[in-house]
Image 1 (cartoon, protein in one colour):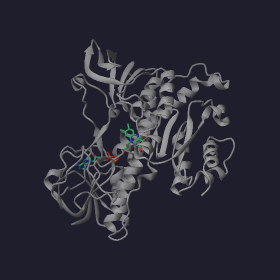
Image 2 (tube, protein in one colour; image 1 turned 60 degrees about the vertical axis):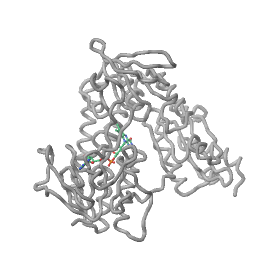
Image 3 (cartoon, protein in one colour; image 1 turned 90 degrees about the vertical axis):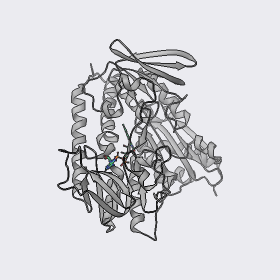
Image 4 (cartoon, protein in one colour; image 1 turned 120 degrees about the vertical axis):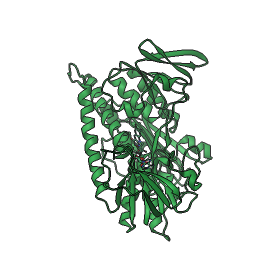
Length: 471
Ligand SMILES: Cc1cc2nc3c(=O)[nH]c(=O)nc-3n(C[C@H](O)[C@H](O)[C@H](O)COP(=O)(O)OP(=O)(O)OC[C@H]3O[C@@H](n4cnc5c(N)ncnc54)[C@H](O)[C@@H]3O)c2cc1C
């Protein structure tokens, strides 16, 4: 009998296993995917960011004239770009395989399913030739479980799309050919990142989204800047659309939709479906142990415990967000709480951050204005435009801004957002500040090197500090 059995060896599962092993628990990880590595390494964060960076370098080279450079023709070799991405991913995955195989826990290649609330049935069918463990037991028992089974692309709700065929991000990140034109369905981070990537590789991109603004988890001031940039680069953006159905027209695929209450349609060589992902819970046998889901999610409390006290969940299968460092923290907390009956830890989403790795990047931490309004949280906000900032002007990075939200009484920083080159990097200054409950007065008084992008935080901090009397 194991102390803890972890189902899924992705980012959350590996973090849980490492933590459980270090705490002296007898732990086992069961991984049933065809490849080992998890979404982040194989088909998520890492391959997408490797490709986005290549397209960003191309874009800068093509804009070389701005800085007085003569780069006669900056082009690209799609096969070479994909090969570099693949080499990086293979290396990351090799490293993860080593960590899983050589960890302070047992690693089994099999698919797991609950047969009762302390027993998993294991099956290694279909895993031949994919690093299968030598001898897979038929069942294993454990005192505790951590479900870390991740997420998968949501099924398409668009009539006839499944029959016509489409790409998900999985396929889009490993294409061997570049379509001439592409319809992107969705307005979230994966949709906008890939829309800009393909557009920068000269693909004619049309993005259809339901809402009025892109990136609904951010405030609309950020979405407005990103929409302007994408349109300027050549993406055709249609918001407020209602998708009607997919169709074929000759060799092309098409989507008919209503836009501002008018019938419309668009055709392209390919369609990228980026309308979201759903938790992987099917086939886990949750019904056999009476563990329900809500909208597909395995619901947990802040200690990552499900309705069955000895079963925990972490990562995309529980959410509420699908962000890798959150999944890792959830996995660590679940394992910690199993090992420590007294000093339990709980997730704190106060520092929840989001980043869309477009160029400029869109990043936020803590409260957005939208959420603050919805929750009735009093706040003061101040923004500063990149176009007024010296370092941004040097970089010709005029699209974007930084924004701080502060408690109107104490000045404590409640949230921040930025649309800026490397915005995902420099929002971390505010994550650190908020981690330590800093006020805008303290941030404004902090030294910042000149000329840097980071010093721009001084402006909204100083403005808010001037408006809020120090407590
Ligand atoms: C295109 C794209 C880009 C992304 N970019 C970012 C980004 O930039 N930053 C960010 O924070 N997040 C990003 N994400 C999200 C991030 O990748 C996920 O949040 C994270 O990888 C989820 O980790 P996980 O451990 O929950 O799931 P996974 O890594 O998917 O691991 C789940 C594992 O469980 C296994 N499994 C499932 N069922 C069973 C079973 N019954 N038995 C045994 N094993 C099973 C699977 O084989 C899999 O290996 C991106 C996602 C996508 C799709």
